[in-house]
Length: 299
Image (cartoon, rainbow, N blue to C red):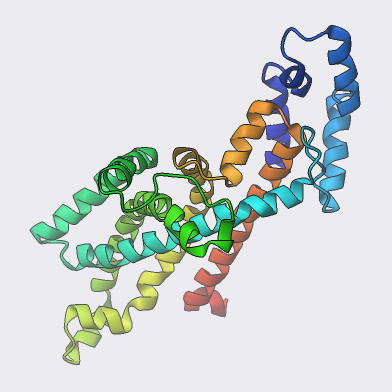
């Protein structure tokens, strides 16, 4: 609720409104006033927000002030691009971070472990959009292996084309997130290597790596799941930038466009859905972490 209120107030502080966006800054004052009345923009701000909030709480996100389309339907249609992008990016981040982070922890006192740690620090400082531009230049322009952007007109009716379109954006987002996740996997691995249960496991004749793989999976998974829940939330925000870089018709691109057009109802509905999704992901991550942590599950 606080997020939607903040967005509502910020939208009202921007210069211009939907009437100006449609008729222009030089539009006839009478026509501008009539259009504001038709859209309800002349009502008190508190009335506008409470009216929208009451309908949203009943599951009605309203209709676009510009196109008249149902906001919930528009979000559902755009989510067919954004949700697969976030899911694929999370899988890329896990596939890269877990083995590299575990290796960095196992080799913490060796030169190659130090190199991996330094590389993760450097990778965390690189903006995702820069990674995307590099991938576009190399993979799409020079090698011509994957498309530089866009999404099939038929959507997922063309699964091969859709997967090809999401490949570079997913690698871009996943690489940026994996650089952060590597550090947490490394720390969890180092902690596990210094634990008493690992020394007991090694006393049975297992090597460090094998003992960690057989007995330490849960100990490493616990912090990884907790951090991944936060990272998936940041992927929602990161997808807004990446969808612009790769010209993807997802929720992020729609949100940026609607802010520019001052489509207040649609922006508020989109933000409400994003906030709800972030809260849901956080709740699921907490539940999985509690399941992995025997102390929390017994409590």
